Image (cartoon, rainbow, N blue to C red; front, top):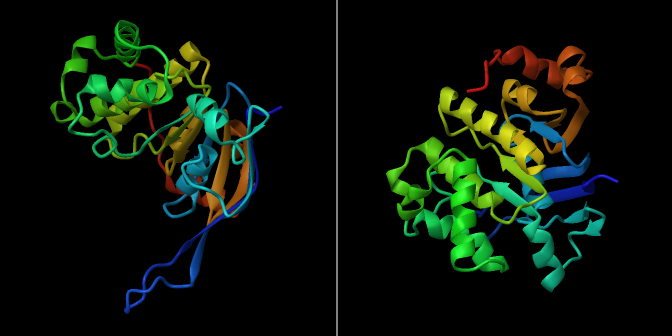
Length: 266
């Protein structure tokens, strides 16, 4: 049984307001009848151009966005039907890493408060135990525990993304959606973050949905690749299959348009 099973997900959004300020009845179909299975321990790369629906799909899988229709099952449980204590338990096992490390961290909070926030919300260790776990997670992402006393503006973009990853790890999740986690970083820093994610997957037995517009990055990290275009998944296969023998013309176009990227371990 897959760890994550999405069936026939559909999500549309209002196109916007008209000149009189009223919300238009016209809607944009962001995700159009998408089904996707993710096995425990694997990394599925979700790739496509901006506006293809990738982030919307990812956020539905962690229930940050409610679908118009369809089903999401996590570890055999109906995520969309869960509420109260059951939903809180499920949320401990599902986390997201956001695209922009500059806007995803509250500048008014110390790193300690940011990293410990999930535990404060969902319950668990308190006091010294929580601080010890936060320091451990900071070390796991390659940062010193002394950073916990500082504020986000004191760090670079790559360091902020590491802080966001430490926060996502605090509840010891099984599944992480990484939503374009390196697109706001320069290439060398992004390569370090991708290598870190690979290392953490082994250390913490994580399952990833890695969302990106960059096929070279996805090729390096993912065991399978799903290609998304205009709200639909047009092709799914192992990384080797997608790279060596893509079946869909859109996939061939993406491969032809992207250069090779060196992501040697640091």
